[in-house]
Length: 451
Image (cartoon, rainbow, N blue to C red; front, side, top):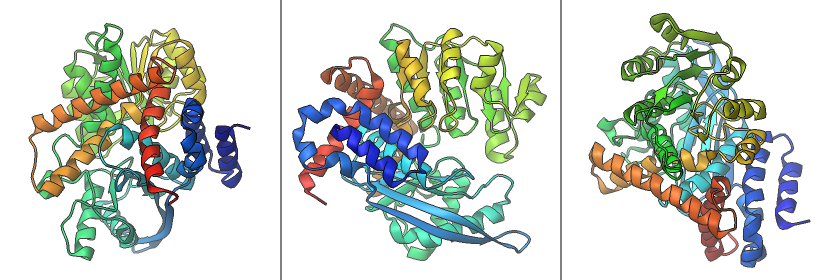
């Protein structure tokens, strides 16, 4: 049995219930096979075995009080996966689906994503099975404060710097940071995604969506294409989807889809900037459901269906797909339908939104495919830029941060292509992203010895 196969089997045996984590490990490690022969020192040092094992896993009780005075209890997590390159860095996710396996999958992916940015950041992830939907601001605040009462012991600007993710936006970051500041009596860059008034960075809310589009733009350029007049499908309706739409509009494309967990909207006329502003107000301020968009703009609305099912079932033509919702939203069947309907480029704004079967379909059909750890790295890259600004006690202009983000996404794209060619898989962004991210982390781990 090869080293890679042995590590994969061990992961499955030790944590048999963590399916999402298994999926992430298999997806990464199988593409690292070419590194085994070329780097025997990694085998000797047990790098492959060590990189799939978190530095530490923190799991804790989060009691909080509802507006009715009732005590509710959720479970909190922080997985500090690998700090070979710098402080642990990765978001917090508040969603009912959160469990240890999902947090480990996200933290594992974060190692390589952060490595690709070239910024000094390790990989980690955290969150809770708390659902902020339908909760009052007071309830969310009390939950966040209870969550931080435990988390504060394990984080710090040089130790672990959390950010937002699904269910954790500006409101939640504000409550978390405010309580950390109160407990520690210090104002430091311990969280990113903060408001501009108290240490945040311009472009941070936009960064993941913008970065995904920038990465797609680089992929398109390799085939002499761009976004102009292309029909684009976007899933999700949070920050990533919102700002992906905004950037696609700026580059001349036409986005025709948007969704949340309750419904999918198809707007063949295109979601222009005015409609995008309406979505931001609907989702970020009023916290409403996407059906309201359909009522306002008289568009098609498909209840309880995701974007990719609707495209498959209705034969909707698209050129470019930007999945920006959640993991495993595109399966093999949907991937085949995308290609049959004209899609030739997929760039992932979400983490692992395509199942392994879907990825196989993309690669078998030689379409442009940017995996999440590369395509959506703009968010954590700009979090890294926020950390830098906090350390320097200054703020960069919007134009400067956006320019740095663009350069980082160009660099990530080049790193993926260079690594794929160097290891015999020219043009394979999955292999390129995984190997480019892994080699840097592995060399740092090797330098530290067995720690």
